[in-house]
Image (cartoon, rainbow, N blue to C red; front, side):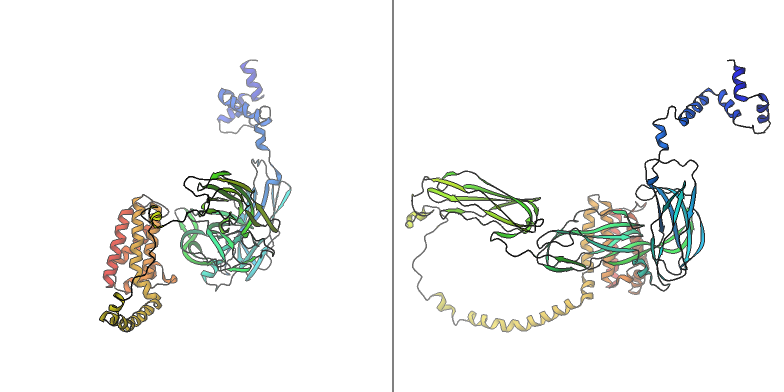
Length: 637
């Protein structure tokens, strides 16, 4: 085939006419002109043919799998920007279709929408499709999203339901979504607490007495968490507790609860062993946080229009936890010493033949799953001629080993009776006994040990002195009376000692009264100890700065400054902010320049917790804090 024939087959009967029309600005009738341009560029023609073959599936068995998609991987869900809005605030409701499969093909998609039922609780202000790209938490990809801007009309709880999206002739229904509209007069703190709270969970809701259960306190927040300023775990009366969250870095994660995404932070986790039966009450866990709370207003900046955010201190308290602890059943064996769980008992004796005075080693190992830390030490039943030292105890995860050194006192054949160990099996709901084997021990006469008598033979005074310089024979006669006792009675020091309590009593009474008054003055104690506690924290911050732990340094510095200002000036949590500090310092006569340095240091230190700052550094900020405290104390004195 000649070049002209190829040209004719690609361009058609119009040939150069089509090309001439394109050259004069007229579009060709079809895509054949583009094909001709590919013919003029061989590398472009090769790419065109390759993609055509892939599209037809000739070469694309592995590639065509990209077009496969699972219809069941599509999920429709509804979400709101604020589940507890005020009557005066608008609500953004999003109806979204997400795909959670491995691949997706959106060639010629067809969508239809089923609008949720708003009833007479909300008025639709605006609605429309949101075409912005979005990857939700958990790796789901947004396929389609329709947004409603709503104005609340009634207070109280409401459930959005009936929302659905039809995609390629298949309907995907969204789960109902609950919302609660608060009165317009609701304080900001209460509205904030509706969106940030602490929850407590138990690994075993109904444990047996002595059976472990793990309690976890977790923070849930719809707002971004900026800082934790106070942490007060509860007291676990009636439990033996072990802190499991010590030395663990706290990380903020994202979890979905119902149809809402929450920032979550594990605050505290402890393992509890109930010490008594019945319903045990654990008081609330309390914490103070600083969250980024939307104000409900829009602001415009370089990045466009966004929600205005304020730093909101929030005092949180978890619900009270009630744990119904089950009592152990009656009829416990005599060798039961409080073990609850599932255990095994291993025993090992170093030998069954020895000489009198030569020790043997007995090892008892209790291992399994349960409250090993509360299990009492074993009680051995040794033959009368045997002695045993206190055991060496080695504990590890799920295991406890007792190593006894036993010494036979005289020759003969003795029976070491079995050691038994009983525990309460939580799965069977009954007591189980484990026992060691019985050993026959042959003891031969030892050198220097008599054939009869106790471990130490009877003897006279001379024989006792030969045992060592640390042992002396007991004196049999008492010293004669008189001497020191007669000289002490009736002398001046004797009467002085009698009069001393009467002389010291008034001074001790006044000192105790003054001390009780000082202890009752809580605010005064806070004020007096503020400088000392601040210096202690700054000393720790200096150590962190020297070791290069920048984030830990600034965290300690921020805590030192806020704690000092709150304690030194008796500020409550509501006034412990920059405006309250500025007003209090100026009112107490602190120079304006020192006040501004204090505010600037707080801003710079809190900023350095999350991102490097251009000016200053740990050493410079530490020196500034030390000088600042000295200037404030100087102004107050």
